[in-house]
Length: 219
Image (tube, one colour):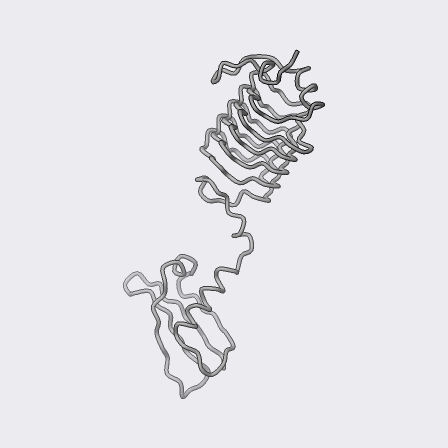
């Protein structure tokens, strides 16, 4: 039996689900729609299912809800912060402007962020795990407790950034980056990476007052 589901979202009536079947002896039925489902639907939307002869209204609503929950796999990668709940994980965000935004605990895992602009952004606890930040502008950004594990942060601008407590484990690379005035307090760095950064370290962080070389324990 084919079931045709018509969604009504008109402004002058109560949102509902209308059920009609291919069997002329079966009358149409109407069911209320739950709020979470309403947010996923479009006006006058029609769906067709092939189901058994006996199906309850509750089962139909549940089935329809499930079809919208799983229709878009990308929804599983919602960003965790207040940046409009846009998907920022596993995305190509090359050149995107995030400057000055509040992106606390935002999830940028595995994303391509080449030349992205994070100048002055609040990125406390944000995750850049295995992300590509080549050439990104992170100057004046609040990166406390951010995760840069396995990230490519080469040729990036980290001037005056506050990275206190950030993670930089694995093959995280800061090669060619501008770290003038950056604060690396309590950032776990490989010894070879620390030695490299000490060769170019200079300046004092304007927020913490800590000298970059001191935060890296440079000789």
